[in-house]
Length: 188
Image 1: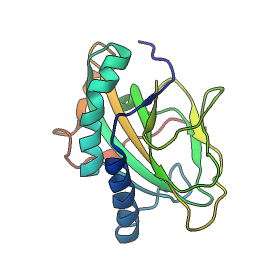
Image 2: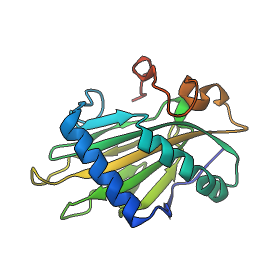
Image 3: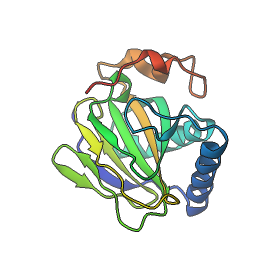
């Protein structure tokens, strides 16, 4: 299955995006969890209940856009701050179909997401669909003031007729359940 890089409007309301942004920033304050693997110690959370809800909300939109039945695997969000990066990588099997959503930011300048040879700029509420397992993607170092942020959500799915059906729900009991995520390796 081949999906193309595609930037679309998520259809999520401004109120929901603002609420989700503030929620993630409060979570960063209360439960700071540094990503030691890919993003220079930026706060992240796997399978957060709000993000899992958005994962399910985005599913029909993505199915319609790619004209395929898909199954959700997992959600993830990250709060990027000054010096944040995203290492160049390929996603693991649970990310056959990936969507990166700009939830919110207060940056002065757009901060691109690189996908292969493309530079993608997302406004809050926009998402980019891409083949996570097949397309290298990354972000260069963010240069901003210490009070600035970029909140990004990641929503992953597998195709109903693809090779990764064993990864439905990311091998959890279902969406919303905690994970054994740390047992998986991101491919460089």
